[in-house]
Image (cartoon, rainbow, N blue to C red; front, side):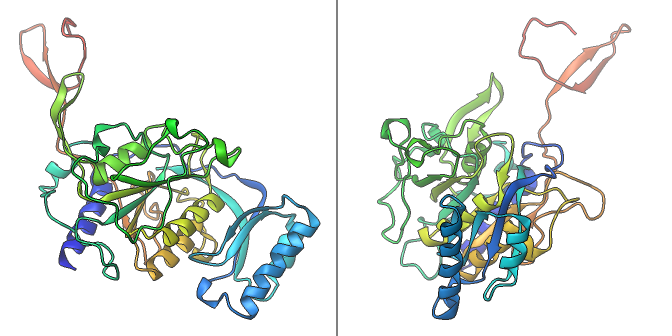
Amino acid sequence: MKPLITFIFSLASFFFCVSLFPEPGAAAAHNDGVYIVYMGAPASLKGSLKDDHAQLIDSLLKRKQDALIHNYKNGFSGFAAHLSAEEARSIAEKPGVVSVFPDPVLQLHTTRSWDFLKYETSVMIESNPSSDSNSMDAIIGILDTGIWPESESFNDETMGPIPLRWNGTCANGQDSSTFNCNKKIIGARSYGAGEIKSRTPRDMMGHGTHVASTAAGVEVKDVSYYGLAAGTAKGGSPGSRLAIYQVFSSQNGSHGSTVLAAFDDAIADGVDVLSLSFGSSSFLEQEFINDPIALGAFHAVQNGITVVCSAGNDGPNPGSVVNSAPWILTVAASTIDRVFESDVVLGNNKVIKVITFSLDPFLDF
């Protein structure tokens, strides 16, 4: 288990060192008229709780056919639905219901990270100890904005066969030519709006691709930003597989009900680690029993999955950390040791170093 612990620590350190796309504070809005009904662990989906769950769903569908949005039944029990405030209060009093809360809107919170950490990326890691897979086949689930599969970071030439224990799917939409999985990206799901057949996990924002490549991208040589910071891009665990869960499709945020659906699928799919780089604002964070990330992570951990989350973009004031449930490996952000300096020549010919750069070789400061 020591290699796995080393990897988990290093994945956590990735969150510590990588500057994730800063956003202003998370939106205070909820998904109007949508509530999450949480009913606990699925292990008790036998007898009375299973009947309670089914009866609540049936009553919703009888009232309004399209009231149900998500039905959680793999890693935990519950559902998300269009409800009035009165209906939500009524359901909260039903047998088997643990909590009912409005569906919150969550917000999104360098290639040199691993060198900065002095981390040796050739270290082999173990997958879930309950699996029969070899140590190079850990599966990292990324809940984010999707992925750009053509990136060289996700080349699968050095990857062996997909682990037999993998239960996931590549939900690439109606036209498979728009998105393809491989032996590196072994699974992908999209939870965006619209018809399921037209959805694609393709990343149109860049955030998810950045997170995935930093965690598990294969080595790509001669990478630079227009000649700046040239070097080799590599992930912390290039031998690991990736499972993508696109829960963000726009800058407007993701609904907590959608994030719970991704947790539910990831648990059933068989991932070993889950990575989340988003959350609520520290000013709006709910009690764990009403927090989609805390609830989903709790049941993931119960199933042997390590959950790593960013600590948010607020701070450094006290009480500004989010995703702080004790079963989550929560990691804050920091600066890195790489700077871009240029010479500025003053009128007296004194030269000083300043942190700046330009892509124009003829620019005269």
